[in-house]
Length: 145
Image 1 (cartoon, rainbow, N blue to C red):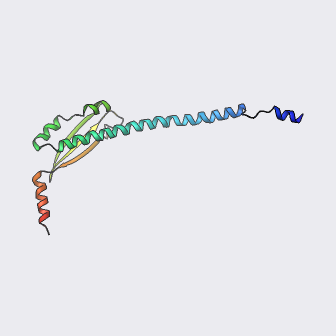
Image 2: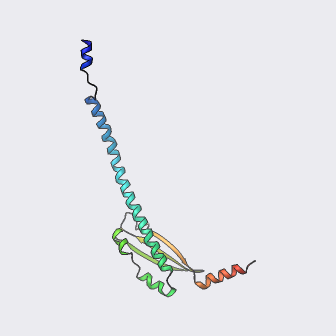
Image 3: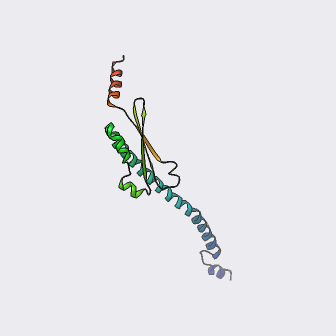
């Protein structure tokens, strides 16, 4: 009889093993779900930041190439591009010019509707040196021993 009872056992999983495996799997999935959501939000925020940085650097390059008289008028009409306005909801672009010793400092800020972004906008600055000042500095350096 002993031989027949050993043959009646089938290899496989018992109900208890299935319940334990399902419980472990459910626990892992429950722990991973919030992490996946957070990761997706971080990817979206990073994409938006890169887009804002590209947008603001493009405006900065364009504005620093303008003649002195046109800069203040261009700052009054400053607004995000149509592409950035559609991708960054509530996008707002601001710029200011500050006089410094050797020229002007142009600072641009871009903010949009993202948590805490209004308090910490993406910001870039550039220095605009008049042509005469850069030539004088170059000639003074070339004359020094």
